Image 1: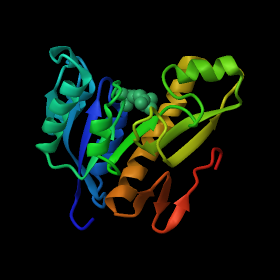
Image 2 (image 1 turned 90 degrees about the horizontal axis):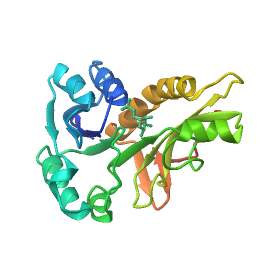
Image 3 (image 1 turned 45 degrees about the vertical axis):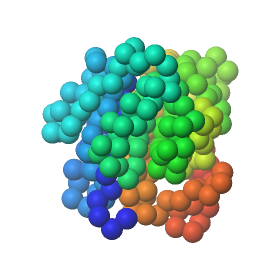
Length: 213
Ligand code: GRF
């Protein structure tokens, strides 16, 4: 990508991943910049983070729309106004329609707080503790129509300690997320990241994210 990669970020809440992306984008050599932050929740704290960084924000509340298709169309229209090269889901707590996912095919990323394919969906930290897993972590992936199922880009593991709680795991997983999401976005913005079918490539090498590495 020759010029700076334009990124639209979708959030629903705190926006700590958004903050990590904003912080990265303020580094001199970072090849992407956040051009807008959209939220489906008025109270999302991430909106303040965006405003503090001088980034456009928009709230599109799902309660104002009759169904998912109509909502997603409004969302796409708002996103496309900013002509993004990349759309980033950062704690956007909605299932997206197939039309939406197809519209942004190969330029739509998500971060998930687990070592996918383990623990798709919600409450990942609690489920890891209940299962007695020794490892947990976070994954960045391309978005496909099936929930938390797209081709992986980056994955980093943490050890689960005997005294861990949902809160302590969430804290350490977040720290990992804040490293790997800006990294994946950098690769994309540098034009180095590609998806073909269900595989991802960095330059021409297939990425096979491997927990623990
Ligand atoms: C993160 O754990 C992310 O993996 C998940 O939602 C959470 C969002 O956290 N998709 P934040 O709003 O970025 O702090």
